[in-house]
Length: 367
Image 1 (tube, rainbow, N blue to C red):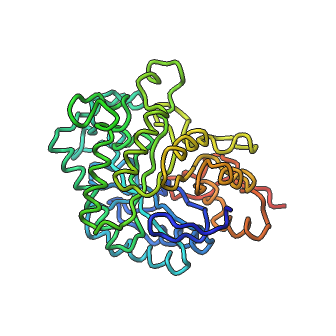
Image 2 (tube, rainbow, N blue to C red):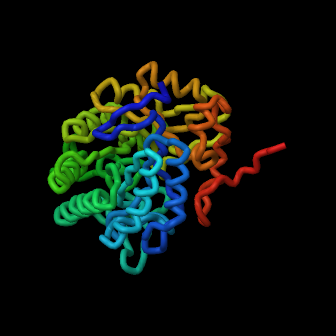
Image 3 (cartoon, rainbow, N blue to C red):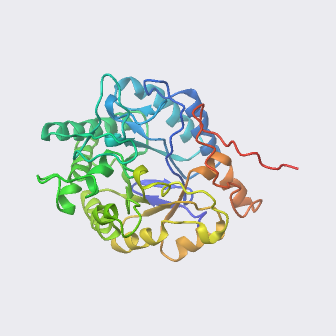
């Protein structure tokens, strides 16, 4: 099944492999995409990855969360991105840009000394208290995401993915831990998801209605069960309800993930050294897939072909998403397809997150 084609949204994919978004450290300081990114994504396309999701690209200057992160907050980025999409499309792969605002995890600067968030909830990792957004700022944020999607379409991307996971702004809104508002943007599940559904509505209005919109979302904030933060945080029952709302709004695929930085090492786990440790979000994705009729993409430590096939056959997901594996082996799909390999060589050491540029830094024994 993993090598079978599939159509999600109106995108025809050559197989079920998805390159999940990650931060590459390869843009210019102002967020301009570079030739290094073109080479990276081009290599993945040459390796027959069905769908490539770019590293997170911030929609406003104050939404940056890391050095050398991609941006899409200005029309001047359209042409550099077009070089990337043209390169990818030469090989028959599809490419979607992930768009984001850092929210309470955004970098601070002289121009943006205090991060913004739905509520002024102290970040337990950075000890920074963000400023609660006004109604006007929420409306402006919806437009910033919308215009980012318009630019993405002009640049030749096959769609956008809204980053609603890992503690960034849209994740801040959907989680009751970080959203304590009492107006129409907080409280109920529907209210907390409203900013996302409004972004979807506006993108559809501005792009003609058939431009694919995907979402990467948390199924859990990842706090230790039984703790006070876990009691306040996002849980799977709420995530299922949010997924239904997203489907109703017109989202055409959901990538299931989990964890925020404040909760510790939940999102990118190490020591994935046996099949039993792979696919650590699969129980969440199964519940979401059972509740919606749109494709579900599963990410999280997936390494073996046998595990991938089992996940698809048993209804945990429709597509398999990986990031670190493709950092180590951009040609992994070809190796698995030919039978040269039965699993990825990635050892989940996390040494690939290199500020000089994303790359595999593990010393494999090649003797």
